[in-house]
Length: 203
Ligand SMILES: [Zn+2]
Image (cartoon, rainbow, N blue to C red; front, top):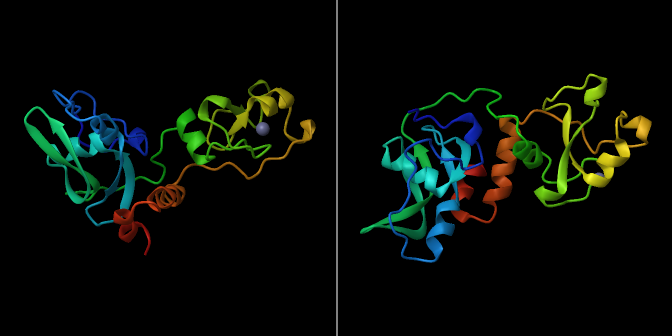
């Protein structure tokens, strides 16, 4: 089993296959929520590289892959064990982060576009958004970071199989691959409310 922070786990909090940390018995109401609390992941060099769910962070700490740098003040109760839930963890071994480490997925496209329809600028729930191929598939458009954008159903219907200008539509901004710069921006947005993240994200 890989102990790496898989690329697809970036910001999604997906747990490691096989050995996910499941409390034998949860004694507290808040435990389920605590397992999903976002945790900032630092490289061994203290460079912020990821955000994962607390459950995944605990797995990394239990496996000796990472250590807790900051706690979030909550405990996770599993069997007779009470574990402090981390807010920030740091990998013990330095990991080279590839330039484009983000999996192309609906979830990540919506994250990149901040759940905002890229044509009418409306901010919607994920369930109310679809993905639009800027260059329609029927006209050779590919499913790539540069050709997929978050789109509301109304705009998607209106656009149909046309290029944006043909439909009298304009993109809010040019779609780009989700790179480390974008990631850091999002980590900062997420970390604004968490004092414990601040010193690692704002420098
Ligand atoms: Zn729209």
